[in-house]
Length: 359
Ligand SMILES: NC(=O)c1ccc[n+]([C@@H]2O[C@H](COP(=O)([O-])OP(=O)(O)OC[C@H]3O[C@@H](n4cnc5c(N)ncnc54)[C@H](OP(=O)(O)O)[C@@H]3O)[C@@H](O)[C@H]2O)c1
Image 1 (cartoon, protein in one colour):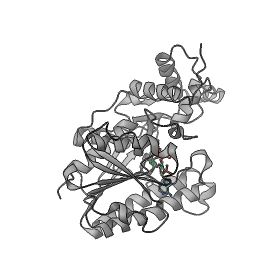
Image 2 (cartoon, protein in one colour; image 1 turned 60 degrees about the vertical axis):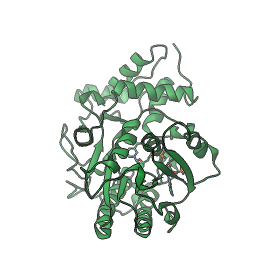
Image 3 (cartoon, protein in one colour; image 1 turned 135 degrees about the vertical axis):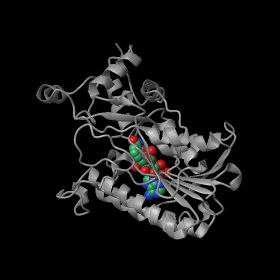
């Protein structure tokens, strides 16, 4: 099936004002696409102004459109005449905005509205679905090297938590189950439609430049990195590894996914560490940040981290995963992890999201 070109018509991005969505918009603009950026609230300048300002800076152009995943038919007019849909947005749990049940219901309920609107448009050739590494990672021995062949639903026999009962009390399970269900849905919907292919992208720990203060996202990886620059210890993911990918690479990869002839319906691409240098412990994260920001007293590790090291010698050796497939098949050139950490911290300071703990 032919891939997409900018001359084929507009492309639509859901969640366009979000951290990953905005970088996806930029990658498409750089290629000359006419981008229909979907936001939930056109009257919120924090979510719209920075997107409007992208016009004139790149070959392509962006228009803003209001739509909500949870309303059937909301994307009908926006997707009309589009050649591709990049479905990035979904209700998230950041800052406690949605509980895990709402996250699950929003992702699974919303995806049907997306594929229904694609069916009605009849012009879409590619749907790129932003899934997550959460749809890949599953119970495995430490050091297990995850690939696109892994599913979060693997090795769950006897796991009493892996079901949709009482999701509100089960944290990440709702998010992961929602991502798995949505991937399965888009693959099935594309097959039934026959006119487009669905491809999923599975990012792990996404960091890199923030384009707007709204990208701070309380509870996100960047939020906790910002706290370290403010002198607080690493409080997220310290029991294991931060498997880091640059948000610019996630955006660029998604643009490549609509244009490449290589993927087909059901193809998945992990967006995660390029190599071992992108799989770091909380202690290494502290050391990297301290090297990059020598004038700041960067927060270290929690006492619980020290206790864990005394007991086990090192943090849990997971998740191990490299983005070889997207680099080999789509020619993605990834950012060095030090560049990613630096740009995250610098933009958070520039946007006044962090008051650095100066030395
Ligand atoms: N950040 C990561 O580390 C990471 C890792 C793996 C996967 N992901 C996935 O990447 C995607 C983007 O996440 P993000 O980190 O960039 O978070 P984000 O900045 O909060 O983006 C989420 C977007 O979803 C949109 N959204 C929320 N509820 C919606 C609704 N009812 N209808 C339509 N749009 C809605 C929001 O749009 P408005 O702003 O217009 O309300 C927002 O732009 C998500 O699917 C997430 O699961 C993120």
